[in-house]
Length: 413
Image 1 (cartoon, one colour):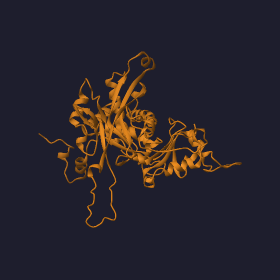
Image 2 (image 1 turned 90 degrees about the horizontal axis):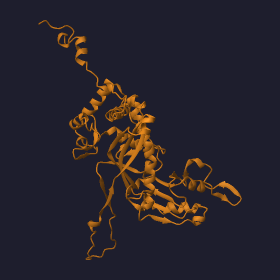
Image 3 (image 1 turned 90 degrees about the vertical axis):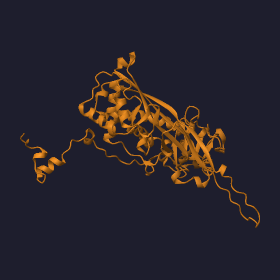
Image 4 (image 1 turned 135 degrees about the horizontal axis):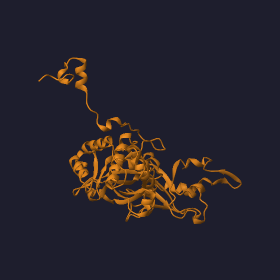
């Protein structure tokens, strides 16, 4: 049989054409998308952190992966008009084969981490995605979970100050090291009482709680590009989540939601000079600051006031004195700072409560592996041509050291 012309085998290995043939390869579907990410900095100029990593913007490829996954989920749910292009199918297939996935699979929970075994084996992912019954309903691309937390960290008032840790367990036991005791002036021959190591380390058990959000997606939008869908779904869910996370960090009850600082026992309490009849005084805020010991008030631990906007306005309105309407705190009212500290607003706090604390001593946990439920049934959804998407995530949290916070409960009502 005669050799075919213009094939790698028929072209000399040392020729220019041979080198081109030898180096040619078919690009994967995702290779045409940018993987560029940018580090995100907070309002203080420092990088935002998620666990041990700096928070980065989602790349074009991340958005596309989330978008294709959502389009396929909608298609499985029977949303009319949803079809995946050949390129989208290739992108999804490539991520099924090589990407990272989290979730509950076959009685095991995969919550992401540093080790490849922390993610669903790709053979399992392929089998579940090919299943015509479940279609991988309990699988989530890792990119979706990590993108969900980016907006709250960037824009939230309180959540962005906390120590946020991704976890893979339903309950987290955090170890707390207690201080050692020292003895001075020990006389010769006198036995030294040893420190009891049983009290050296104590546990801080923290459960995680499910939080669900529902969004309606226009069916016409669902046929749009995967990048647009991925970005929009992440934005919609994160926008609502960021306000709710701020609320529970401050006021959470600790029963069916994370434990908030105001409901934590052992906080230092401070009394207002004028009580609920007000007005506030500079001394009120100084007392809150200095009720938290100096070793806690490190810049890296994000010391800040947290109260509602009315309380902030009243603090900035304190005059220099009788007949002098200049403001003792300065005239930069929109700086949202007070006595050199940030002043964060959480409007679910009543007027009577003002917090000061070092917010890195509040640890928030996100359990990876979101769940997505899709429905298009019902008269309203049909009339509006929309699909209801319910996303369930899991968060936990509580202060890991109550001494890092001070609370005033009798401020001006």
